[in-house]
Amino acid sequence: TVINSIIFRRVHIAKGSVVKDSIIMQNSEVRENCSLENVITDKQVILTSETELKGSPKNPLVVSKGSVL
Image 1 (tube, rainbow, N blue to C red):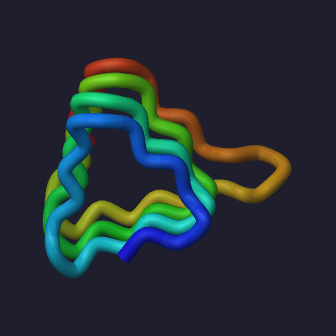
Image 2: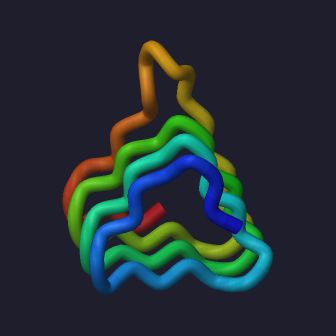
């Protein structure tokens, strides 16, 4: 599920994941059952299954390029 978010090209979001108020840049992968809210990911980020990341609207959580969480 994607709610009020920007998703770049070549991004894979698996079943059961929720992306809300976030920006996911290209070549990234959000695996099964992840929960993201107010998150900005740089390029080539992999979020493994069951990952939960939450920032605030005034201070979003930023994930750097090539990270695997």
